[in-house]
Image 1 (tube, rainbow, N blue to C red):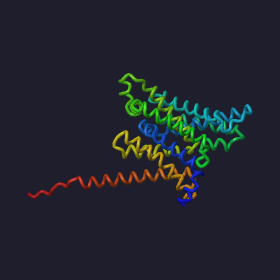
Image 2: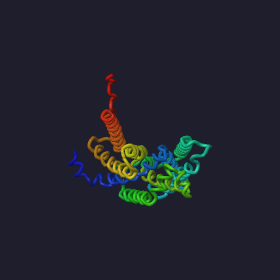
Image 3: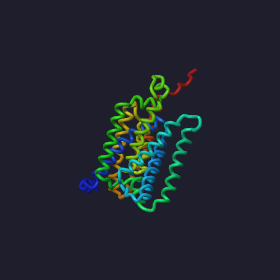
Image 4: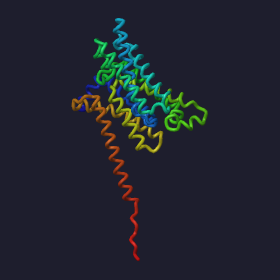
Length: 295
């Protein structure tokens, strides 16, 4: 089956490379998301993007425009996702809302809007599902190049602004003490979250994107010995897990999105088991028992 998979490489070329590129960028962003302690921000952004997509299709149906797979659809999803991320960045750490309640509020409002608009959209249901839940095995070359461009932008911003991003995520007080605007860097970082998640939705789908954000970053933060190693480990797993997911999906005829999630979960389980074994081993080796009282 492996030989057959390699022989049919051209059938998998764009989807596999797009999954690799998206996984790399999303896993990098996942480290920042976990450092921010806002794991469910990705779900709120995804719902905001979904609301934007529904809104564009509703406007298109109302005016009789053909918007399927157009730039307007992605732009609408991106703008609404940016609005959700911007609201969270501006209202975060205020006494009026806790972070969890604010994320829940954004998620519920976006979901309610999607239900209301979905009731008014009679056409293009399949196209909307394709945009929200990913095509996975039917990635167009232009989508691959677009995801490549977005990931390159994320990597460039990470390389240029890593320090303010890290301080804004984990130590905003220090950043403020240096005279830097914490809100600006948070909004900038959340804008990158939005770009990565919105692009990933179209390639991988909502649940695989959430898994690729959380699991590689969680493993890397637990296992790495430095922040540089954390990013490298998370990006490596983010790039490698989609490749394995596509391979085992082909091998056993499983749904590709579910296969990606399963592979990521296996990595997490192995990491937890390895950590427990190492902890017990070092405890047994280096913990000395008190010598008996000879008197």
